[in-house]
Image (cartoon, rainbow, N blue to C red; front, side):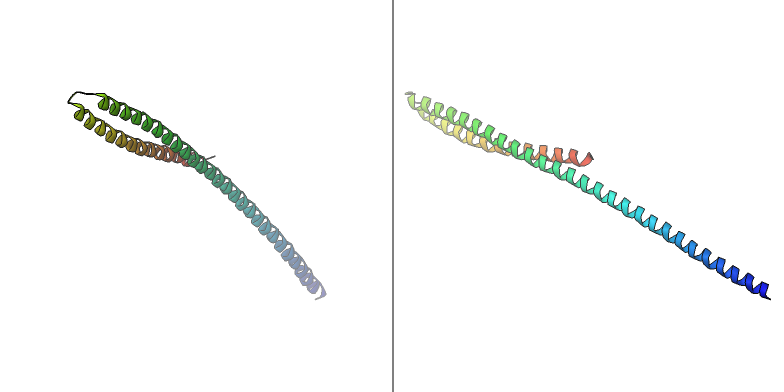
Amino acid sequence: FWLALALVAALALSHGMAYKSGRAAVRASWDADIAQRTAQALQAEQAARATEQALQTKVQKVANDYHAEKKRGAAAAAVNADRLRQLEAALAESASADTAPAGGVDGAFAGIAGECSRAIVRLDGYASDMAGKAKALQDFARSVRVTP
């Protein structure tokens, strides 16, 4: 009887210790898995932030390039407008210096030329603006497709 009782006590003690060590092993494995998942999530978050920062930098570069192109377009339009004004002034001078009876026709021609020059300036400004926007959109599309 005492032998059976000792055997039961020994089995209970060994099973209790096995349970405790098994529970500790499972807890350690669980903690290691959680630590690994946390580290992976942190790495993914850092990679996402780096990608977002790179895209934001590219967007800012495209915006700066667009504004620079817009300024260059405006400067070119101003130069073209000055040339057209000079042409209009030259036509007006030639019309006023002309003493032939067709001077009225030259004056009308100068007025038409002035209207054309203003229309060309407006068209040049519009074209420059559209070209700048198209270039900005193309640059942005390229920058979004390329990942760092």
